[in-house]
Image 1 (tube, helix red, strand yellow):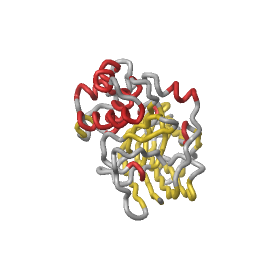
Image 2 (image 1 turned 120 degrees about the horizontal axis):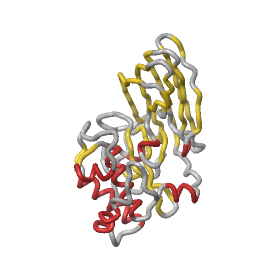
Image 3 (image 1 turned 60 degrees about the vertical axis):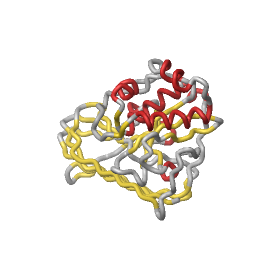
Image 4 (image 1 turned 45 degrees about the vertical axis):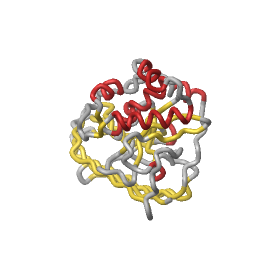
Length: 268
């Protein structure tokens, strides 16, 4: 499968701002072809960008602005093939079963055992996905950037990151390692960066997308981490910026794959 993705971001900085982007498709040796382009302009001037390795093949692109500037970022990538499964470390499995900032599995342990007490493995994954899908309503702009899984469960609505955080927290409560992945998602409506959960069962990381808004087989990983605090597409690490424009596209060459929520799918 060949996928073409793009992102355009425009933001205004103040003086002495340092920023990091996480918008590039994660590198993986399984892809048969991989072409990409990233340009960053401050007005009419190109901005030096430093690439840093992140977890799970992800990459950060770091830049500094000594003076206030209107910055335009343009990224495109065309990727063919299927990602190879990554090496799984014991440290990862420990990290992703712990509570985290937005996936408070310790606080949701009673809920997880009340709803899924006798379930394990793949059966648990499918039950959590179905339960979150049925309990929450997808409402654009309905949550705050600081909301975690507990607030999402109380409010019963949210966006993709909220659905993913709740699924992750419930799985971790039942001792299933789970993480959040930021992805490009062909077929997503409305189009944006998308967040899904991944859970480690039977020796593999399987995608869980409780929103059901896009076929999982066409998704491309950008980065992954404990929750959305590890996967933000734009971060300031000094100074301040104002986001003025965000445009994301993601398409496949040919027909979108069909989506069966019961099928086990590995991100790639």
